[in-house]
Image 1: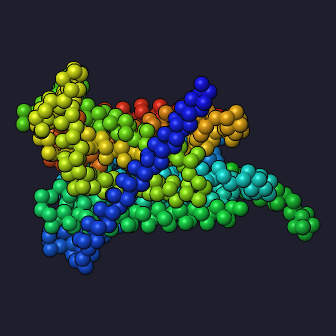
Image 2: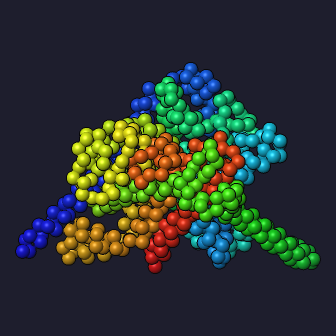
Image 3: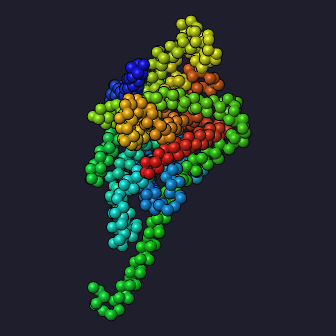
Length: 289
Length: 343
């Protein structure tokens, strides 16, 4: 009787362990499958023209304008989101101790972090694209600025959250030491706390950059896309994810190959960014010890 | 030091100090105000996203009233719009994603916290996190070019042979003959066409596995070692420790993690835009093509005018409200764990 109880328990345990290993195997299998297809199909589509020619040439062209556009959009997004995000995160960590607003905003920030990006894109369409259309009598509609703002909205909660978390890791004794010397709080924040949490904040910015580099949905109705090279931020602006989206829908296999090549470049860029972010973060941990 | 130089120095020094204090106070207040304004931007963007979609969707809500939610029409040629088909597509794909992603994520978290040898834990969890770093458009491409054909050749014909009333091999299975309604969920006019609700749900499942499994892994690690060791000392097997100690201890946070994944799945656009098929027929079958809120907006917003644009804004508002509720539940459940950790 007891022997059979032991056997059932052991079998149950072994089955559970096997299923758990299988689940991990499934996760890793899909990772390998997706990366393998992106690598093999992407490398097959790599050619020098990819980086030198623009999308206006279609099959004979490349993705140069899309890459430049993506770069500009990302820079605009990060330039907007970083100061706002760092300041908002600082307020959450340092100033909101006794207010009820602090926990509320921290909570809403966490929700913004996973909010559907397509709705945020529509929000920017409403507050930037539509007004600029009316103000300029239709000369400026979709623009790089609008795309950058949409990306900033997606980067913002990432930066707010990491800044908040990193500042809260700074030991309280540092604050007390500075305040007891009569340093005003703004000076304490800017010159001591932000500096102490610097590498963590940089990690947050890099992670935000990795996140917005792959965003497609909010750019469709803000930056819109452009088959020509443009550096003008009030012009319609192409981006790598948006061109990959268009090229994937295209019936022509040659265009699809270009989409894979773009996907390869994009994936490598994003993965490299997250590696760098991780490196910066691991170094920051060492320096804290 | 200065005070000894002249007789009126103390008053100057005091005046200077007072001036400096006043300046510091003013600067502190300005600085605090600036930071608070930035923090309020977070609040403004969330409220603004809801308000702007509701405002631009007002025409659709006004024209169709409550019928907008229950009508299955989505017909740009006759200017008739109802949210039912995209809403159902969004919910069905997200639920299919959860059905596959939750057990797999649980298995991964279990493997990473209890089974794997220490040297394997780092690499495997980094690899799973890598899955979260891949842009969603890549999932969409892979889904369209690689996974949909795979579904069409291997999964869909097999499912239809066993579960549909109109199987490609012509033999109606025992299950279909004896279980009522089951065939309705697995019928399809095109047995060898890969895009559809099931395919989209599976792609979403792969996307949300890293999110759910990393939350589960994190909360599993918060279980006090003492508790687990006590159970082991009483002779429990690894599975019994996990099922009877770890899971009850972390239940709320695990559900929070699942809701977090659900929130992601509901709002995902690019991963499903290609593999859903973008048709607006009302059908319970998961092997048929369909559409989700996000994919409908991505596909139609560029060319939409007038009432259609308003209807798209209106479904965007619905999506926002639903994800807001789901994510709020998720965060509340995860927060309760955080406070438990603190105590």
